[in-house]
Length: 66
Image 1 (spheres, rainbow, N blue to C red):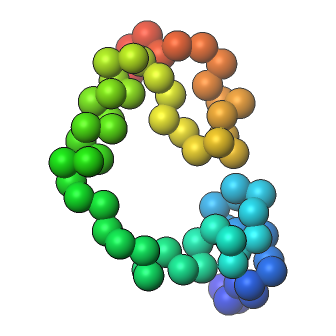
Image 2 (cartoon, rainbow, N blue to C red):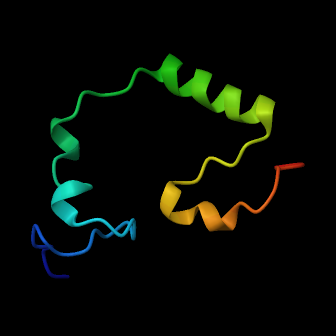
């Protein structure tokens, strides 16, 4: 496996350059577990798809059952 260069497309397939996407992820502050739980609960209540914007085309309608 070769290392990604700063200007290579990001490995997550977001369409962004690696330097603008995942390069500095370790330097970001961590997210508190209760914040994640609240966000997921909100998505569940509204039955909304939670995929990244780059995969938004996968969510064509409301989620009925997961």
